[in-house]
Image (cartoon, rainbow, N blue to C red; front, side, top):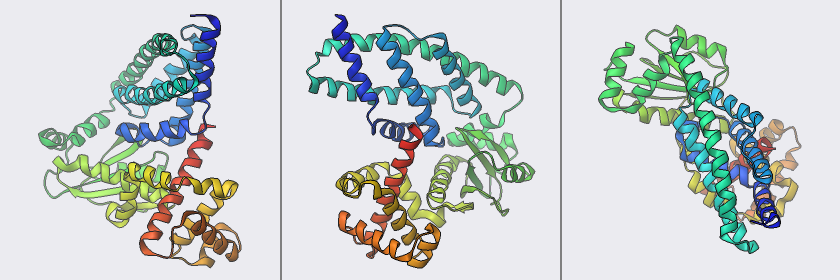
Length: 375
């Protein structure tokens, strides 16, 4: 390939990687497709993805494999994911989802730019060589960290994974952990870092606690009654064979609680509608696409309008309460709610319109948060 041809393809890939909506889209795809990483913070996934993309683009531009500095970063990523309890298969799966999305977009951009497919294929072959070396270092680092973690006697994540597999394996794992196999079990999911919650869980009789997929997870014989300073999702009671479903529901409860700023232990039944909303990324994408012109019309006011509408709805349409929460004048809230209705055509005073309004505003704010994390 001529140098100028190579440069044109690399320039195209750099443009694709630099598109504002790429990282938020990739992060959403990864968290939807690979359940084991869904508990990781979007900013965490975005930061590592951005760093890998930048390293890969530099390597392609220079026509070389990964440097030792790049491999050191990869090794640190493998070590971090192992410490978070994310299995290596999930880490590799997340990278695969990211690669597929990026190269798919690169093919579309190449076709639009009139770049021959064979030129893009040549660059892709070099990328595959680069990625193979990266994956080898990632696997090595992850296994080394995982071996050290398990050799220290940390068996809880292993037993927890067996519990969440369901079937007879779950019943045997419950018996091994000393959990009652009758009467129902409860699953609690929270983000690590709340020392009080972790201490409470460790002190609970027969509770099985560990970090799994970047989250603090506990299986308990009774529903927790202690208060927590942070949000924690709870589901149950469930039989051992049903704990995989209970874990998914507890994670949905955590996401719903965090989306509304709730703290403490939140049972999924108390946020059933919000949990259903948070679990349907496909419908969220459809809703966002349907109202794509609205953020353009709102411009820089998109964030403030979304915050105002969401706060107003969460306050039971109480303008004064929403204004106090946002530290603005009540008329500001009224004007922003009215502006939202004008640009979207959604009536937030209607029951179902309110649900769509809250969901749409949440989607806008999540996308903005992901874009900030990527930057």
